[in-house]
Image 1: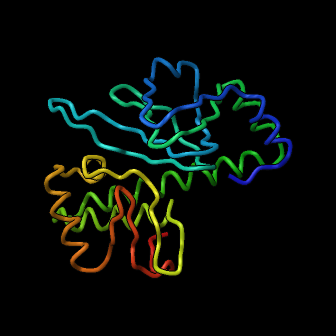
Image 2: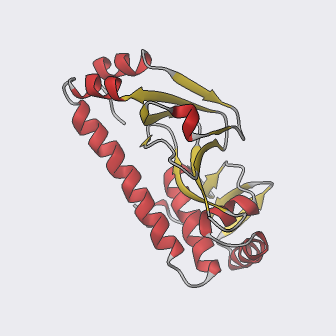
Length: 204
């Protein structure tokens, strides 16, 4: 979110939650908070699937992203060390009185909505291989680092996490990753990936 010095000052005066990788925050811990602004790191919103022991990642938010706090059956989780600004309703109203703030919030929330649309599109694929491919391309577009040999995803993406992001079992993700490596789309180093794609071809 592009901000003016006035907006920056208001955000700097707001409460902040520092999260280590793996930390989880419940809705009860964010009582009174109406908006979350990610300053650094990568936050996930995980939703429980009633009647199962599975969770699904419904949103991932990096620096400058603005997201709604988790609701019932959802939690906020940090994939890496993450710093989040907490906006109460009162602070949000103060923010909206500043010139340019409404447009900045609208644009930031619009990008979050577009990201969720892309997530729904990826989940609509019938084949799990296509779901995993679409999710990796989406993550590369949002969080990848462009290099000479492709786009690096320097994130701790376990097969279990990719399963939560694609609605697939961990074993299914493992098979999909093996196939994508055989295709030459991705190369894996530990939990990080390199995608051999043209940055201009990534989803927007």
